[in-house]
Image (cartoon, rainbow, N blue to C red):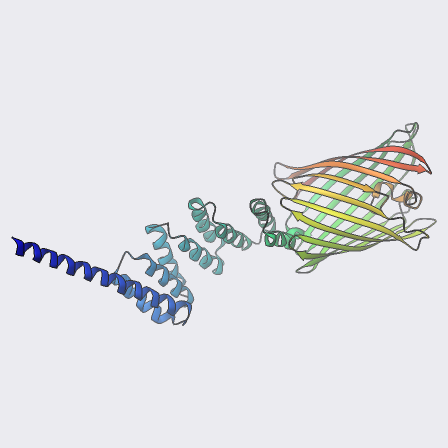
Length: 417
């Protein structure tokens, strides 16, 4: 009886040793296989050892991962896809299988398959940042800039400290939206008897091309006193934003009018530079020619993405004048679902050459004090309509030491074509 027990124990130990030896050999084989792929780049030998590993340990899924990687490097895409899918089906806990298969589909320009695969991974691992970034790469394959921009805005909300996401949004923000037509109106009320209201109306058409935005605009301005129009007229504008390189873009505007309520010629140019980490700088010039005068201004600004918000500070300074008469403005936007969904606040001092409603009075106003503040809200409705409303208040010096309060109510309506 004792001999039987000893024999059983000896056989058990022998089997355990054989199993352990096989396990060690299998692990060693996997190490060599991965080294052949990652270090020595000997993919054919790696494939040979990978199949040997599967033969010895059919359920050892790491060998299937290795074979998928090796076949991918030898451009045998169907074979690579088979082994990655095999791992996902057998055990979705292998997170790297989702990454490898998604990358395979991205490099094969198969956007729909890549999105489908990474969505499966995100369903299992909703906090895996790498998966979100892979989905962004897959979406970029679809060449739908608006979809990519919307997804980037979602990622910026989820990872507000990742400045690289903000830089990517900067790169596509000029080409992320469809063509659209818009109508806007600003009514200005005054607290002085017999003055106002003033109405400034614009009709614009926006055409979106690759790396280029074209805008045509018709403006009509009507100023009233005691319910009668005392001055009115129209101006035509052409405006463009164009990407000059990967990290910068330019803005140009020209306006022409034969009516006294507008400048005869209005020219604007700004150069915007992405500084990285969510920062953007602006340097520009403004020119206005009226019937009696010409005016040149310099513009300098700095912008910063802060989480889901954007802060911009800008200053204007008159050139060729006895005094520079600087003006300052600041704007903060807090974005929600998209670039067109936001709440904004603004404040400023002085009169700038970018204020269309009072541009014909620019020469008179630049030497007078002006304190302004306002707030607005933009919202996308039914995925096609953009509605914006804004209210502003301006404490304007209209003659030395005498002030009036100007209240601006603006409504902007755009339709995506």
